[in-house]
Image (cartoon, rainbow, N blue to C red; front, side, top):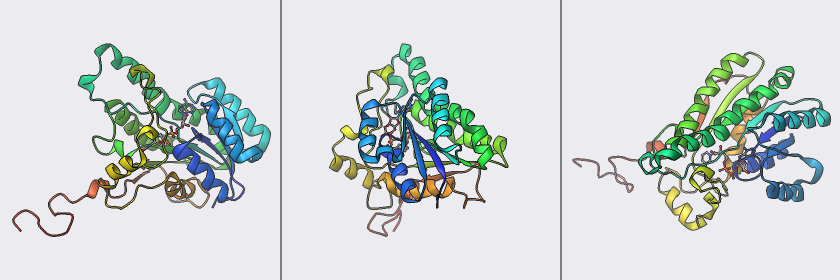
Length: 274
Ligand SMILES: NC(=O)c1ccc[n+]([C@@H]2O[C@H](COP(=O)([O-])OP(=O)(O)OC[C@H]3O[C@@H](n4cnc5c(N)ncnc54)[C@H](O)[C@@H]3O)[C@@H](O)[C@H]2O)c1
């Protein structure tokens, strides 16, 4: 699917981005990862060695992005796809429970990482992607499509990603295709909370695996919580040269969560009046 393609994954240190990296390598891609967390880079180095270009950096920092761009050009001289996968979560806290003097800083922190980070990366790598007639895939969430996938700030950032995908697809056409993926829950996420609420050390992976699986299994039509690798083939298709038909779309991969039975009982039948 990606034979010979050079792909940059921002936020590829764990969770979804790491699953995408592993899958993309198996599909023949040369992979670069931009990651802020030093410890994760050590683990990545142990797994991938020099096969993957590992760049430490903050995707919201223009200098870090330019350094990543320079390292990518130095190693391969080109870029075929940019995958945006970094993100932070807002802890699902209702707006009324957030102290008034924290709302602004929470907004800034979430929008910086979850939205500005994608926009800056698109800007910095655009010329390379134009040269290669490449592709961009950004990560939204089911939270953009239905309430309660996060708190207000997280859901607003993920809605912003859907809008950004539409606008950038129009602006970057016809050379560069821009699409999004909106996943539901998945295993092995280390998605962390915001510093502005003192939750930067709280991670999704703190929830015991069984409790996490039990919660999310009941929220979809499927009977298991997917791994990041299960979402990765969709990213691969959208990122690849084989996708000549889709731009400006965000694919909602929510395991049927938005079509759960409302009237019928899960065992079948038993709707209102039956
Ligand atoms: N976990 C879920 O259930 C879920 C569901 C839907 C969508 N998502 C989205 O999927 C994406 C990946 O999340 P994940 O669950 O794999 O979390 P994760 O924390 O495991 O992976 C995100 C990575 O991004 C890195 N990162 C954070 N800020 C960064 C920055 N400023 N610069 C560079 N790297 C940075 C983190 O260190 C981490 O390695 C996010 O956009 C998230 O919002 C997650």
